[in-house]
Image 1 (cartoon, rainbow, N blue to C red):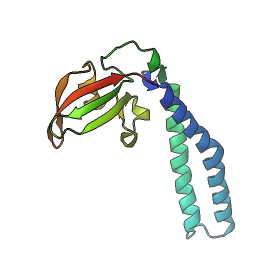
Image 2: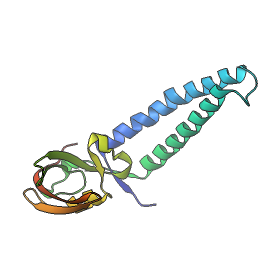
Image 3: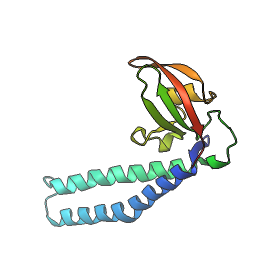
Image 4: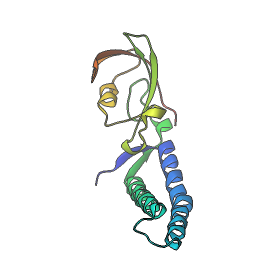
Length: 159
């Protein structure tokens, strides 16, 4: 399997989630299953089925995090010397040339991407449109809702 890029900050955040799942969530779920079993008939025991479902989700997420972190190529983006050119790890401030609205995104690895936190995957079409461009450039992006025009206001590298 190929190594997947990940920021140092993203690796810390995902390791913290993995630790929480193993040390807090897993024991709590095991306890909930034990309590639900104590209530008797498991066929019609909603608490038991809910706890088992949560256990499946939690164990799946633990496996996903362990695999992702084991293949991660953690990159210290503060050491990148890309200047004003956009590469992995860049934090980019953009202006939508049509609305004037400003948005800030950081280009990160797939596992750490979270649009609510303005972290976009390096593999996403939008990040791929940004890679290689520089501060001051303008570009056109084909979004699902039509063509958007952006100007790159600033590019910085902070972890």
